[in-house]
Length: 322
Length: 305
Image (cartoon, rainbow over all chains, first blue to last red; front, side, top):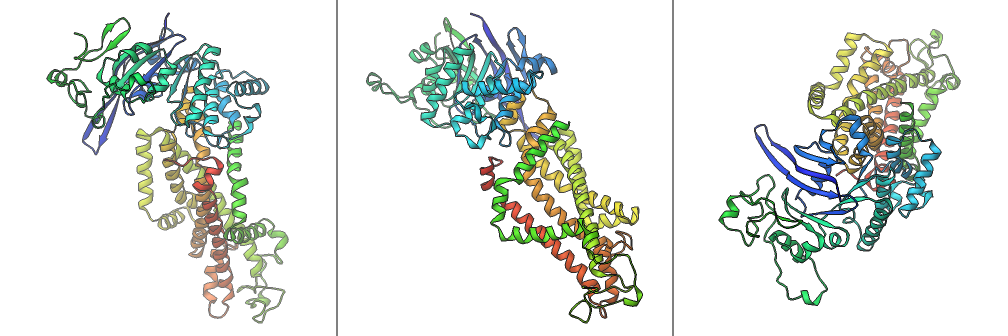
């Protein structure tokens, strides 16, 4: 298997100005590296504010990267400009969290879903474009006649289907799904997840799936990367991660998941104290040290590197392995 | 470019159609305001047909005729002025000047203000800093004073009034559009369009601009009323439209000299100004309500957060 997308030390810093003199740097994404294998679904989990979405927007060049590389099919996305960048965009797509905000309220479904065709296949006639739009709508479970409608005429789940149709109409290889189900009702979430799985099989898609929902990620992804305050803390195959979570933060995330399994009932719950620290002012050493039950002086002094403890299982913690 | 204009027109008409109209039909203010406004617009458009007399034709034998009911005749329903010109006809032709000066200057102000506001809000940075300082400078001048100074420099005349009105009314449009663009450019649907690979022009004209139309429509009506008053004020003090053009402000100004013996010369132009401004403001109030978030939701516009 080959990596479709390889992130190497991707960084995105924001500068916050308060008044004229005070400037602070927020390291929203701070040196993230992982691979996304072709045909797989790679999960990216973490609390809100951990930098998951910032990473997604940076990889897609919707934010200007501060540093690092994002190698997509052998090309560094961070070095592309103008037309080359536009050409590569055809192969990538994104579905956002809130379908109430990601569809322009004054545009018809035809114009929303047809926009990628206009940009990437400008020579299509109106009829060709129209039939492709209609076909795509049916593939995501909407009606061909919906082209005439406006976003407000649809429910949340249907809107997310429109957003998916827009992302897929030019047949990309790679899709970033930025919490595509967390704004939806539970009953609708399952339907959208199944749709995404069906489409992945049909179009041979590679997904980067961002979420904070451990149940969803377990259901859909092959590999999971755990982020905390802009850093990668653990990365492993899904099964491995759920069986043998090593980082205290991952364990805390997993123990927050309610379970129906009676054997699991007696397990020790690991609850985190307090909120994540201010990203503009993270604790020294390990960024998790301020909330970690295992933290000692070393953790508060030195930042742990990401090391491979098992084949394919990476973790950044002084208290793991040796 | 022409395709962009066509879609922009469709987007604009969408806001003015359906739910907006059905809301306004139930609003008495809109009906009264709309009727008044329509009467003035119609008489301006068809002045040649509606006016009983030539508005420029002096008739010294019939000067200072009072209106019907105050000793006058139906020959001159609203009376005549000091040189015997028919007041009703002059008012009707005056509607042309008042309304067209206001309409043309608001249109130009929208073009200037929206362009600068969109550039400022979308690109930010140095462009924004410079343009907003210009706006601050503009706002620190009292608008009337600026209009008067401009007219003194330019001299009286129709197009000079239009220029002065435009230069004093583009600022609110620039500020409103800039503000909306600041939030619009961060919205996910704009990010989605960028991820697809569209350019800035597409985002500005096709994605963001149509979402500012509700605010622009409402602001335009209030600026229209304001410019009618400004035109009348400039003409009143003699630096607006040149005589013998029948501008309402000019008529009010000349009527002042006869206010004790022939009150109607000043009275009727004053009433016309008041009525048309009242009508437009009623219409604008109703439009503002009709395009408000609650109804916006029906139109599918999500509130700016």
